[in-house]
Picture 1: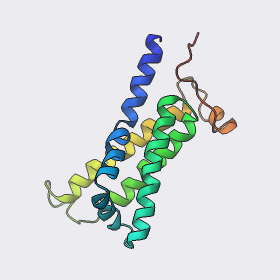
Picture 2 (picture 1 turned 180 degrees about the horizontal axis):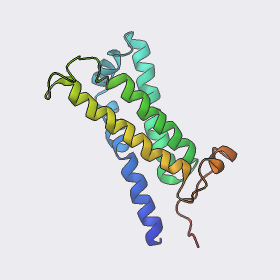
Picture 3 (picture 1 turned 120 degrees about the horizontal axis):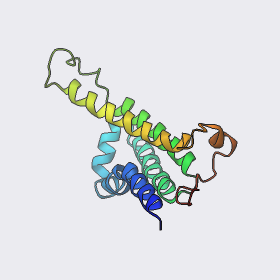
Picture 4 (picture 1 turned 90 degrees about the vertical axis):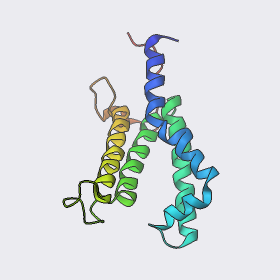
Length: 154
């Protein structure tokens, strides 16, 4: 394995590390707590369970896609969207009403988590547009193709 391939693997795993193993494992080992958290947004328990299982699937399958390079751009788009949606649903910094009035308030704490989610999503989008400056063209031409992150480049 070349140094470039090793670096690509480490960076890609660093991007998904939050999801695989930590968030996914937390959902499995603390399923009732995860359902309770999901019920804060999706009140009926059956709906919360379905949403939670969808999130678990996204975290596992798409993380494996990003790390393995298999359909990695499509997986990265899904994870970027997942980061944005979870930021909006679970990190509503505007809701507590104390963002401007209390520097130690709940709104400020949620704001930083909101930005972290969006930043992580932006990191996934870097996989989609690629390092070669071709932008979205390769993704739009073949959304489920691999970007071949571990192939030697001239």
